[in-house]
Amino acid sequence: MKTIQFTVNGVQCSITCPPAKTLLDVLREDLGLTASKECCGKGECGSCSVLINNEVACSCLVLAGQAEGQDIITCEGVGLTPNLDVIQESFVEEGATQCGYCTPGIIVSAKAFLNGINQIPTTDEIKTALGGNLCRCTGYTKIIKAVQSAAAKNDSKKETITG
Image (cartoon, helix red, strand yellow):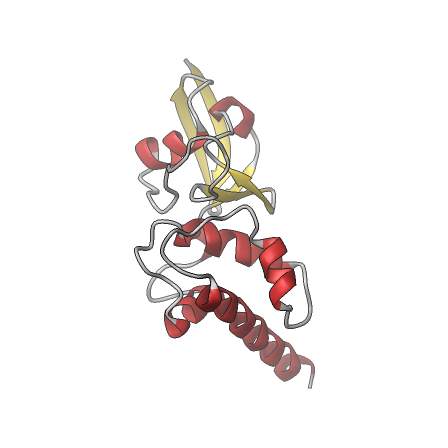
């Protein structure tokens, strides 16, 4: 057992657990943050995606011991009702969720992608950015539209602030 300290969604955490426990299990079992889901357990589907120091990572592949001192953001940290982030609002408005299993991981990945750009992305750019996230329910069309919609809303906010 080891005591591990890190920040999750802006809150300092201290967890005592086996250092080889996955970050996904720590988030779900120890912290009650259940948006991230385990699907493949191999880092291939993206359902467990979180941001670690603002970089997308599959939490099923990160050991708790590796989280020491890191800044982690889960889908809950992106936003919660009634304070949804623009990406979450766009997913709802565009109907970009079906079963919802993959949605938190896609939202986290989309948030990281949108944070790094200043324009409305093309379909190909979105496909590349979300390439590590699999959805078995949709044809991705609504997901792509939601990301473009969120980017457009972000652009409008920037224009309002600077204009």
